[in-house]
Length: 135
Image (cartoon, rainbow, N blue to C red; front, side, top):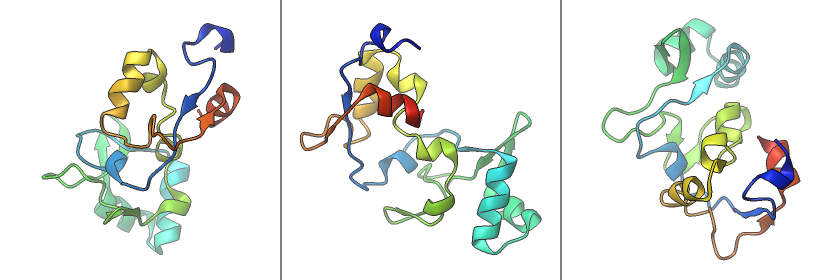
């Protein structure tokens, strides 16, 4: 993606406020790779089988972390903190720099409706180079 071609070529404002809203409130999937499954299971002191039974769901041949049915919160969200933060999946590490959030300014503004750190008045301006490194 050419930096000059994107609508956010001058950067975007974002600062994680630790609100936990990115981990709850909306149905979806936190996809995990096999390497991530192994890392999370080891971090929790579980076997792969134990971890899979308790924390994974299979969707169309892929694996995702389970979420609470009523709230759609990730089962690893404890209050506002992630219990597996050091080994969280890449999908979690790269939020909000997902391609679907960056397609258009309107998509970015839609993501800002549920993420208070997007366009936060005290958020630093993140340069496009850093955004693309994180993606």
